[in-house]
Image (cartoon, rainbow, N blue to C red; front, side, top):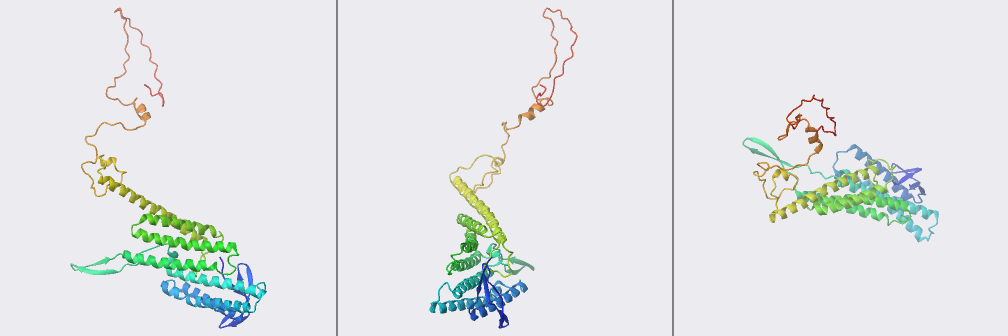
Length: 391
């Protein structure tokens, strides 16, 4: 996370301390112009006021919260303008870029302009709503009371689809403005020289690109265009993965005042939600596909004549009612069914099946008619076991 930090205040102006230096990504730059220090002092005062307002009034409307950013934005813009004027004066004097004053002003300019963009993005995030627009809940519906037969019934009207689409359109406009503001950071002098900084900015940009694609996908879902919605949600999932890879694992927790900073937990939560959305939208596309195939089959009289009990896994044919006279096959027919033979072999020893004769030990007589009775021999019992079956 990159934030503008001012320190070593030595004098006061307008009730706030005026800093002497600015910290930016591990570098410390001296403030060479008094107007810059005064503007940064006003930024610190307005930032503290904004934080107190947001923490003390959590139930305030989003528009009031966004309006509270005005003081910070004005002070940040004044600091950026003061830095720009100081640089122009040194350029008119033809001061070399290697001069210490010019180097300090370049670092200060990059820091204050990044802070200005960060506050703009934070204001847009407040206007978008909770969780940066990753959820889309219906607005509280209006209720109209009608009296019928001396009984009051409350009729709750669902939010119209046109209103939902208008809200999603407003979100997309805010996302476009946010992405454009983030892209402008790369145009700042000295920003492209820091490769890690550019990667961090691209990751934050991908976070809002994912949210933009997801909200556009929601609008396609409302209009029953699930194929386009699936493509957009899949693209949003790719952006979320890119954002998650660019954020370090030791990122701090979310701040009370929304800015450009995106935490690891926020990126991880968005990626998980988008992955679930991909599964859900894929299921809707598959249902539409099955429905279309069933319509074609019904138009060509290709519906199956099997009883309903055999077609429970088939997609229902559109416009065709359930044939209550074809639920099962009756009278039932003798049909082979797959079973485990081991069960029947074990049961053979204990069940008298039709047509099975009892085993009888017969004594054979002599062929000449002189039957000689032999002493009966003890019959050795057959061994029975799991695989002997005792037959």
